[in-house]
Length: 262
Figure 1: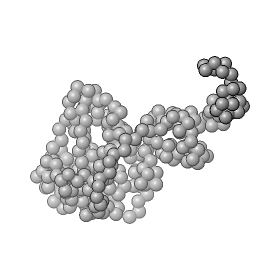
Figure 2: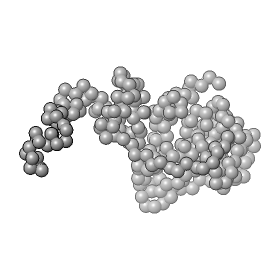
Figure 3: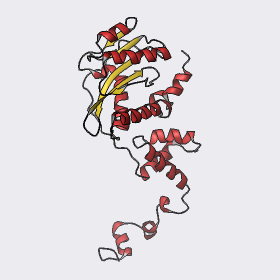
Figure 4: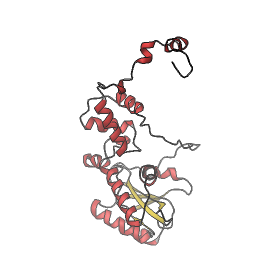
């Protein structure tokens, strides 16, 4: 008898469902489920990468040797309740603008920007992000309570020794970015300043900022500055070497950079 005090036979008749279908267990609940191992792999993958979706799971599953198509991964991902909730932002009204400088190869354009977070004590920390617009690599970056124009110039010096000088720097009009120290450093490099209040003109680094906010800053609490440096540094390493990037054909930025033949 059911909670409504009617028989199973009558209840199935009322809803138009056969008794065999009502009693049939879902495939994922059966002990002989052929996808049990893949489901376990997906759950572990979602636990390790809480903000990644089924598309990246499909790419990494294929790399791990699973012979499966994206439709099956999408279905199992949904059945396991692993959907990533994404907040949709309002789109800007108007026509997109074309950047004045286009990165056709590595080191053509570096995008520079800052963002902020805080420790659990409420003390703000400042995060410098530098992104190669062609390879999408995150280059270096500082995490500190305060970052001046001189600190930025010294960080760019380190990157230039490793990679060579960029042709252009794309950035906004923040005080560190219009400083005398940066102007002296970029004496032979173009500085492309985006108009005030138009962050979409620096889309590559803004996209990167969104990813680090969603996947790192938004899911971690920082107990100290050193803790923040360690967590953010590990995430940036994962971003460059492990995280598949959709605009690069789901290759990682470091692999794509190694394959560039420009």
